[in-house]
Amino acid sequence: MRWLWVDRFTEFVGSSHAVGHKGVALSDPFMHDHWDAYPTMPHTLMAEGMAQTGGLLVSELYEFKELVVLAKFSKLAFHGITRGGDSVTYRAEIENVRDIGSSVVVSGHCGDELRCEGEIFFARLQAGDVGDQEIPKRLFDPADLLQWLLRVGIFEIGVKKDGTRMHPADYGLPMKSAG
Image (cartoon, rainbow, N blue to C red; front, side, top):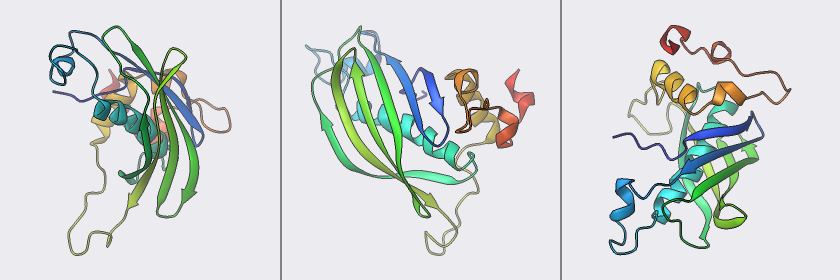
């Protein structure tokens, strides 16, 4: 099973901000695992949607070539429940960039209603950060990453900070896998 908590991006400006969307359906299996008699989207999955939105934004900052992992939620708050039929709009904005990683401010809205918000720090892992353990060069296989980015529409709407279009070749992603 794939755990994708963003269905589509409608805005993606590299090194700046991103807007992603998740349609919540009553038929989603997770809706009935939380409160059986009152199906809702668990807050943990709302947090994951914010993290995926912010994580892709931070990964693009490092051209999808660095090991970027969620290190911590500095702040996290929920302001209501999300039910079947709701559409969640996630927004992430780069707040701070440092050598060790980057922080983003994130939120999730259903229409005009704020449902969740937070601040997330994503760390850049480098050799030596995990002691003697060997760390992989990438967290995702380039072909798998390309497929994910294509599915959520990053290359249809994404632009770099200077306004030029984002293309898979800019990030060393294998275009032969796109077809």
